[in-house]
Image (cartoon, rainbow, N blue to C red; front, side, top):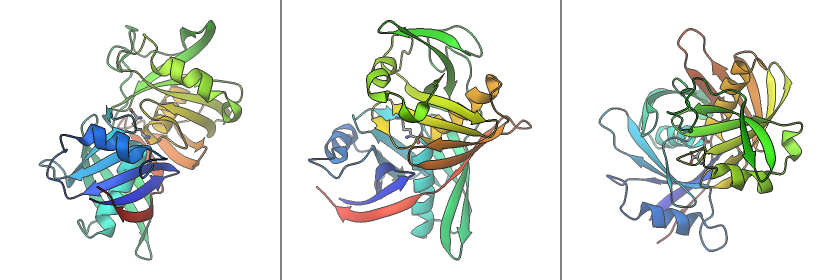
Length: 277
Ligand SMILES: N[C@@H](CCC[C@H](N)C(=O)O)C(=O)O
């Protein structure tokens, strides 16, 4: 099996092209190949598949073998892959995701190289039951949650996949390893959840660290950055455009007032190509 190792701000993926559909053993392959000691090592396994509705379809398996509905960093990698390999020639393409439908993508190409990728991530879902959470409210903002005797306040946002955004004093030094796993599987989240810990620096800049559902602490999360910006607007912390600064680097996020869509701009990189069985 030929694969390409790629990343978006250090959120890394094993990218496979050429299958006609998601292999039946994709979950087991994700666990095996994503293992950082006995496998290739990655946060997720990404398949680029044919689509009847878009240029291509993306399917993503987390490193624990669970399938995610959407992935912001992976969709930028997929766009770069299909452009670099000549599978598309336009700089405006579409990619189908299972959780967020068909997403328009713009490749910003400089001197023949993909510099950044801008993705129309669609409309955020703010209805608590649809995110899903067990909270019957729309939106779910600054809602109390308790884990191990500690109270947090979360804002719930789905970008096709579920997120809980929690504001803390110092996201950069936050104890992710203690609180991330407890909140990921909290009973308030029927499909588990990605948890973002955020600290607002000013109305255009937010530090964020993420504990991802099915993958643990990653260096960046594109959908998490979108959810953080939406949450920050809902909470009155930021304007509708802000830099979300992650451990692996910065993403530029806009929640457009006119069309209610969230736009994400950031890089995508190839690390190496390889073969595995
Ligand atoms: N890192 C991703 C999100 C990957 C899926 C997530 N762990 C989930 O299960 O929803 C991103 O960049 O958005």
